[in-house]
Figure 1 (cartoon, rainbow, N blue to C red):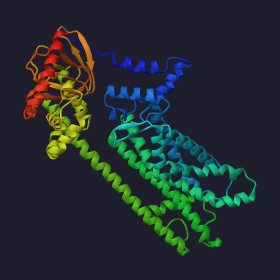
Figure 2 (figure 1 turned 60 degrees about the horizontal axis):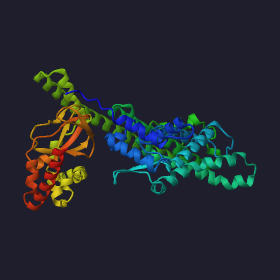
Figure 3 (figure 1 turned 90 degrees about the vertical axis):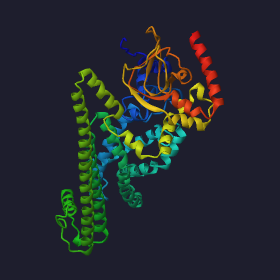
Figure 4 (figure 1 turned 90 degrees about the horizontal axis):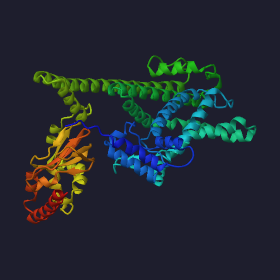
Length: 522
């Protein structure tokens, strides 16, 4: 059979955006901006939650029709903005440790203060943007694009934290340019409190780590390498945050608990960093004279924190090493077994490529023993998983629409998963049918016995249902256009489920006879 090259999907994608934005000025620019906001196949998480072209297309249509002015969480704009915010977040954390060494009485616009103000203003833009960006609700398995729900979720989570971390930069310009001594005195304590409050930004470290994971998938980096980089970055971030907190606490102790003649007035930023590093690494009590009980207690506390930090670092390194070595050995052994098997069978190169194409499609480079997992879990749990995955597909079949839920669940439990690669023939015209198929994801093409293409079927569609009732030859050939995962229902399993319900068999038989007469007439 002639190799099929599908050209129907891509034009459909382009025409939707063209139909929505088809008049007015700067039409190409408006389409480009809109394309940045809608769901994009280039976003790594799109393939995780929308693993077929049909699902992506439906989500795109939903946004263009109902939520055109919102930003999809899996759009190019959302992805690139998260990368940019990650850089801003890193600069702010570095800035935190340096800002802590600056005299709180200093009102001069130093470069480090200007950088902090600029970055905080960028984070303010991020706060506003969050109200216009959807989010994926894992409980509902759906992207939420309702403005009220988006605002409600953000207000209940990180809005006040994000805003509080920026408040100090809002106050800085007023204190810099104000000549009112009374105003400066009244806002001094507030300025110190807001400056300390900025350190709470460490709570949002999870957002940065999630961004790194997206970047790993986007750049197709090694998962082990990325995990090591994330762990190192986490350690560095915590270290910088600790520096900032220790500096601020040290300034507070020096101002309130140490006599003026004993203070280390000559301490510079490098000297303070050097002293703190020595304590965190347990190298010494720091580059200072411990002639005060408060200094001794403070040094001991910092050394205890350093001890915990070292344990944390060792744990991260050990975790990365164990996971990397175990996963790599397991995958390499499995891949080697497959290679040896193909060599032993002396299969041609074309068949070997097809074999590994199947391997990568099914496991996505992450091997799991499905049979072993199914043996481990209970029958009820296994059935519930299958019902969750396939129930919507089964209910679309005309024969099954009036069946009780109990019968549907039993039918679903008899489904078996099969994978077909591109250009695999699923059924042949003229061959007696014994089963029907449900498309979990993928695209197939229907051909007449003469080889004429009739149509395409995608996710959620089904075909071959007549074979469940009648022992008739297939009237069409079905070929996989893309790699597909199908669920198969055999006639014997179907009749076995319906055997206790003869009236249901009678009703379905009548529907099948009518469908068969219509098919033959066409």
